[in-house]
Length: 169
Image (tube, rainbow, N blue to C red; front, side, top):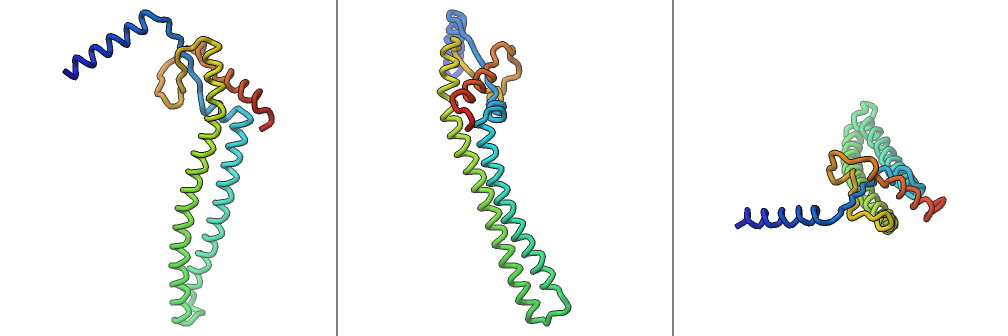
């Protein structure tokens, strides 16, 4: 039964392609992000957030290094070294939590920024596809396309449309 359904589906799909003209286009979403003013601004915003998180982590690492030195310092008495050791352990936990939070924040910010960018760009891709008579436009970076004719690549058209619609952003 399952094989019969697959066979029927395959035949219907092939007949659709045989009896209708299908024009397929491709885009490179990563290139669009890398080359549009809007995409470059998103990348800079994410890089600045990452730098900020990295600076905070580095400050905590510096504190950890100092506490670790103090915890083994022979100049301190045993009670003070134990206190420094506990402070080091607490700071290590704080650092690990901060690291996890920073990773989560970066992931969420990246998803949010890219989703917003996609929401703005998608209507332009659809408009270009409609104007050029494409039946389907695929993203070569995520669909596993092994080969395509460069003539169907509309990435530069999308880059131009985005920079025209969102100048200087």
